[in-house]
Image 1 (cartoon, rainbow, N blue to C red):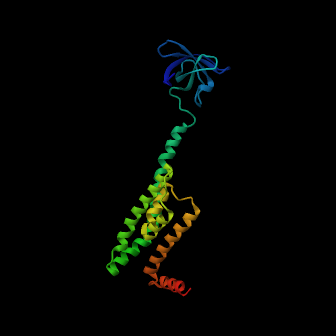
Image 2 (cartoon, rainbow, N blue to C red; image 1 turned 45 degrees about the vertical axis):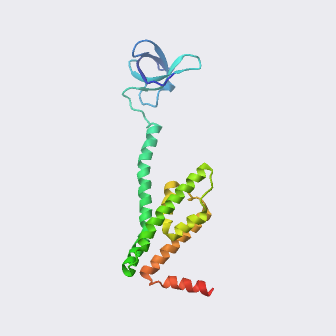
Image 3 (cartoon, rainbow, N blue to C red; image 1 turned 180 degrees about the vertical axis):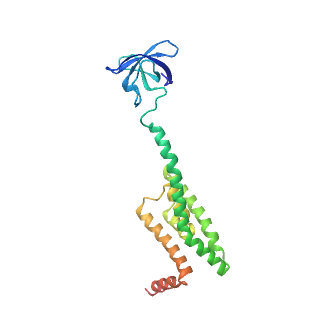
Length: 224
């Protein structure tokens, strides 16, 4: 029986026993109504109330009303579906705004450094490399996740890390948040954030320390 919403008037009600009968709007039948079939309400059913309901077959083989509510009476609680819809509507914008804030925060130093680099050396390569490699890295993440779902050969992690190191780490970060891919694997995250740190330290040194940190690091490495 299809769950069609019907309407009728409560013609009999035994409040002490918690059941009664609904006369369908076309007057063709009386439908049994138990108090448990009514959605939460502050209003006790009374004869004459207009009841909206659906039909179901009970264990006794009789037709019963189910998912019923009294017309014009507001339920005490918000339906679960409505609650989920509200949560979904409010959570998504917050999640997107949080991601945008994180992206702006992470890209601020490299962006300023790349612009300063382009102005002082007349070399725009970093300004071009970051967005291009970020797009390529994001696409590789998406492809790898698709391959994982289909049980196909995966994109090697070394290739992903190489693209991140070549300037695509911001695209990798966005992909991790949006696609929920590679974000829980600890070993992968360690390498990823080391790459991010290298880029941030490079531009920090370029802008504020006159490349002394990078020079010191290279001297220590080669002496070792």
